[in-house]
Length: 360
Image (tube, rainbow, N blue to C red):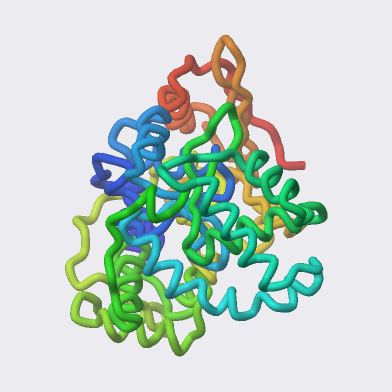
């Protein structure tokens, strides 16, 4: 079994899939979720029968939660784990925030004041849209212009005051974390490090300590401590002279050599590692993140390798899918037809036209 084959299986892309969005998010530990439509597919594509409605229902009933734990970036997390993940991965970010606050001409006193207004407005299980929360802050005398509003909301979420709720008329809502996810697990720092390391390795292996540090935003020292703390459930082995961590009890192997997947932009299969050369040639990496702008395109994966990107256009008559391979691939349209139909079924619409276009 190749390294990339193992990753496809451990990520629940190949082989046995998990029954619910909550099980998928808990298995992966956290799922990058800054792009709303992409993160829905990142979870939905791992269901036995992919379903957009099932993922949105899980957000609405609170069985999966969006907040800012790892690297100060939005992720889906299990609701009961949100607070210890925020504390473990976010305290350094908050401690380093003084410079950004200065650039925005915000003080810690300003931030604390907005907490008071937000707490009062959302108490009792209420939810408010981003726009309404920013209007509230403006009306009380603190400007939200020039990135200030986003930073105030980020700071509130990073501190564990608020979290993201379901969409309302295509606009994001916010709620109090204590109201939306009242049952929180309490873990010590060492327990939290070990728990996060175990989940990451089991779901992303084979991985290096550098992959884990990159995924969490922690230091190498902290990442190594977490992995050693979970060592009872993990094993180390060398592949091509590099030390990788693996689960002690691996999932059953399956043949992934000819497997074809249409994965989301920001999917954990790509975003979850520091070193991505195993799955994409360096000369093609810029096609996934053009201009290094931080926006990751949806990916065509064949045999574990990212060999192109894809895009969708949803219309009343169905969804058009455009495949853009990095290089010519024989019989590509036929090979992609099954995953394209699966994506259309996930949306609940017919598959319309499927096009293959060059990257150049």
